[in-house]
Amino acid sequence: MPYGFNFDLSHMSKSFFKELARVAREKNVHRRIGRKTRELAERFRISEIIGLNISEALTLVEDLVDVYVRNLSERERFVKTKRRALFLPHCSRKHMDNKCQARFDPNVPSYYCAHCSPDCLINQATKLGRERGYDVYVLAGSSCIPTILKNNKYEGVVGVACSHELKLGDNYLKGMGLSGQGIPLAKNGCANTKFNVESLKSTL
Image (cartoon, rainbow, N blue to C red; front, side, top):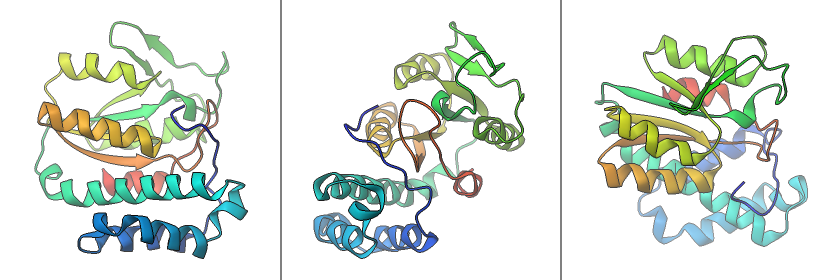
């Protein structure tokens, strides 16, 4: 878990995420990101609602805006890609014990969803990805990514992870000449993490 704090934005109003997208679309937002971040954190009372101190709230919102900015700047290139992969975090599985029937293949390395729980985020996301022609990987950690990308010739990647990890992943993809899109977690942690399936659907 890259952040030293836990957060849960899954109950934030839709207007918060709409405002994030609006800020990201503003021209030269990267030059004013500090001021915009503070405005967003204060306007939506992030610290109060999710129990973070102001420094943690600013870090989180700044990273979220950065992910939105990167997605927008890369979108045109991404939609032109053909062979794509979807990377999902195993911590978003409904069950983290033997109730989850996913099989882990260390040679890939990835879990393979067995579709055992209809309301599992990973089940839903795996189906979405496969329906759209993606190779889907459920990762035990970001260290799995270099092996997968080395063994497959992908042009585009969609990743679901903490905003901080998405930023690091984007830099890695650029180094390989690949195009990517990121879906930030709305709730972090080591288990029962959450992301927005509708956001994933629109990105795919």
